[in-house]
Length: 234
Image (tube, rainbow, N blue to C red; front, side, top):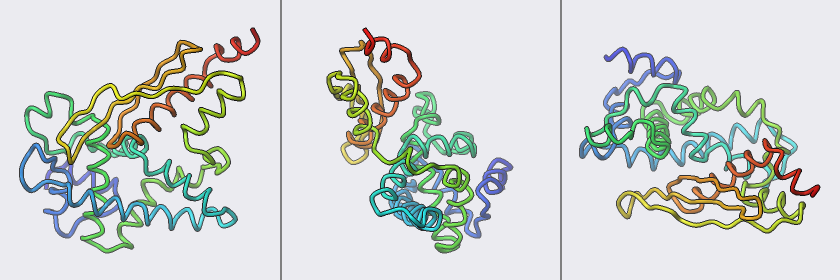
């Protein structure tokens, strides 16, 4: 087996009995017919259940709403992209030459999909317990260190409230680009706060995901900047 795949399995904490499942999970549709989209579909559900189980154990005193919001943050594209980079998925993806030249190995949507497919493949290879152990290995540290109060609201709601508390107009969102075929599109969305002259972008497999990503980046920019405070004081 390729040494890169061997290293990946060490990082995942699971050695696939059926190596073909892992290979398929790492294969983008641009590479060939035996691609990872079905495994991604399965992995999305397995990841959600595994994360739900881990959160249920970790936050015994939290209600359904809080757990749902934290889960949404953990399974969003940005988080999956970050985990995929940490375990070295870009180095082992099977992409067409054109997709590779276009930077597909670093694209958030492709890496997030591939990570879900890898989890789906682990479920087929070793059952839910194996997949849950993998999810715990990949997300456990984040879950343990999470303060549920900091993740209580989705990014768009938090951004709107942040601005309204400072008597600033709510942000606006617009789609700037749509890529891919109808069944597998990626949306680029722009979030603007005209009163502060700020704009941030987000990308996702749906408009909602892209808007949340753009809002999260806007929040990060606002909280890291002195401009909002200065504007409020003036």
